[in-house]
Length: 160
Image 1 (cartoon, rainbow, N blue to C red):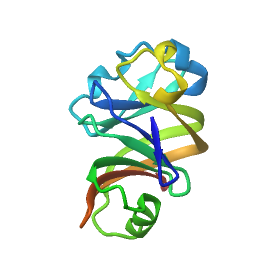
Image 2 (cartoon, helix red, strand yellow):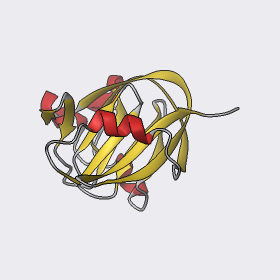
Image 3 (tube, rainbow, N blue to C red):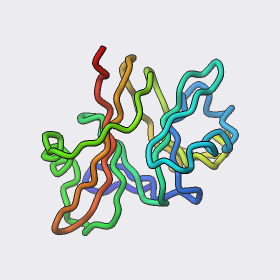
């Protein structure tokens, strides 16, 4: 994990996918739960008795979470000088956001490499993510900038 421009990044994943694991079940995460979503850049799995888990991936890209916009950012290649939070804020009103999955979330989570047992993760191997309880539509957008490319996945309250 590394911090840059006040953004904390997980440097990448050996398995190509990250999981938003409920914090209370981190030690129970075995590292094989997300095997069924390997065809999707954004997916969800149901864990009996633990709710739904959001998965993000497709490639072993560095990832960060921006709580203000409730957006996961995958760095697909960028210069060090990009103000990632500002660029993501500007992208919030952009056209082209695509609906991915709808998911029920709420509480405290850890964003981790999906293929690593939770008990084997250290503090630098995870990002703490707090999500208000609710039903969310996950939307994705490819953000191409002159100095970099990012994949964005935001949580938006689902419409009833």
